[in-house]
Image (cartoon, rainbow, N blue to C red; front, top):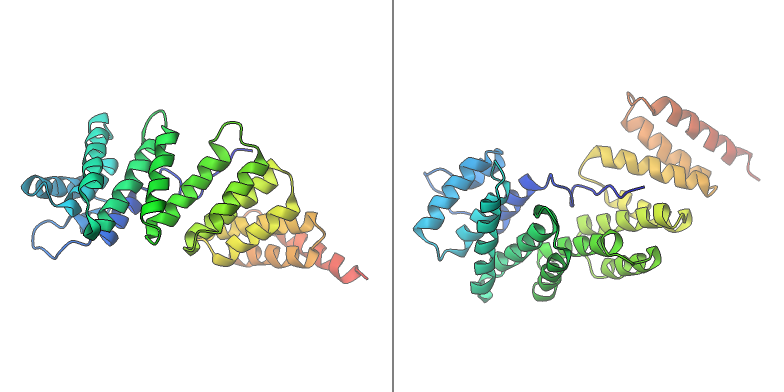
Length: 279
């Protein structure tokens, strides 16, 4: 079964990208068109046009240059010229950023890695890996450092030819030991759970990771529900009927109109009956 990445990896990260730029690179209040607000309103082309104007007025401003590069990655229609300009801008930010520009440099490294990893028609995985590793090495306390760790885990587990599932699990577990952001830890647990279950067929090794990810919680209720079903299925396989019933019922209560809920309630009842009958 192929790996289905969570929101942190997929191509729907466009809105997140400009929101992150707005958070890390806050703009001063202005009566002019506010590109940050335009981005939050999903009007990416307006945001990009205003950032282009500001960048042209002051090309040395690293904040505007980084935000403009981010906007080029989400501007429609997507073109090779926009991608090339974004890369050139980010390379210059990376080179020119001083100690006071840590946010600009960290975001530039992250976006350079994402260009190589996700925007090129043929991903340049080694180049992406190098940018992720540089970000983690040079900015270890930055919010994006843990995000980079998650992408490195994805590269280690699914995009490195010749790596066995056991080697991938060891690499991801080592990354987990270095990551502190809850969202990043959750995604690493999700990766490890998926790897142990689908690649190694080891339900006992997978279950603790799915439980750890569910305890942190996902931004979207849908992923919480899917995690509950996954945990319940693994728990049933391992004979942990009380845990299975708990997560089946959590799903049923959260999604009473889901087409699966009637079956889920039956499975919960069966698990509880087995628990009651156990010596």
